[in-house]
Length: 350
Image (cartoon, rainbow, N blue to C red; front, side):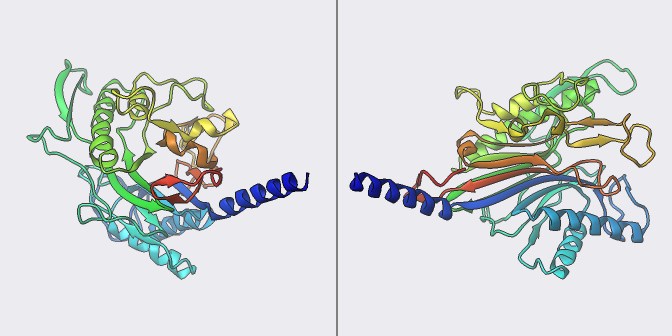
């Protein structure tokens, strides 16, 4: 009896030791809504026209980062490198000097919106860079896909090609786990036929990026950002809207040659259906979140199914004020067990 008791104690101690070795990792996706630094003129959209309001906008976004304390936060609708530098300056002034920011100019010259990230971890260097954007010009089909859609003035449908003009690819090795991120900001307006057709084509390009630039390099894929579409398999807080595309399906099952989905939507792990919304459309444009406003789930974190045992929590932070963004940060917490000789040490995951 004593030997069995001693064995149980030993096993419990071993499990506790492994749990203590697990590395917590908080991943956040946040559309900060046209974050434009003072003096920046590029892009056709201005959330705030004057410098004092732009500075205050950066202060509020920095406060979101300060509050959530992410290890990696992917940001969308950042207009230029100047905004990343301003955010880092504010965070460093607050004492969070371990944060670094990485920006790459995206190819959406009309909006000027870029996908970037801020992190307290050291990113991997791939192709000589800590962040890249994947894009092909019209004459190069490598990172483009064809679609057909009517014109905005009712013209007959015409065939055209598109790249994913707003994306960022970056990599980390955390506790031995190789994680490859594809930050995305897909075409907006899931109620518009032309936009839906273009977004579907973008998702096809994203499939190629995931396979060629992340999985082929031996990284577990994580897609996150403003995908501007709904997941037909995850009920969200708005029962009145359903997807008419396969955008999220294409991303979750990015390799049709393999059985089942490769990615899981973090929203599926949020217990309350009422909490599954990431965007607030200010329908009456009064600057407040009113009962008549539209709350939809269009921002997502899709992560490799092999990481599911290590999920500690998923949630959406609905504390962001309306004057900061019309989106809310999506949060995924992982507890990553150590990897020894290429094998996960079991018992340390969440």
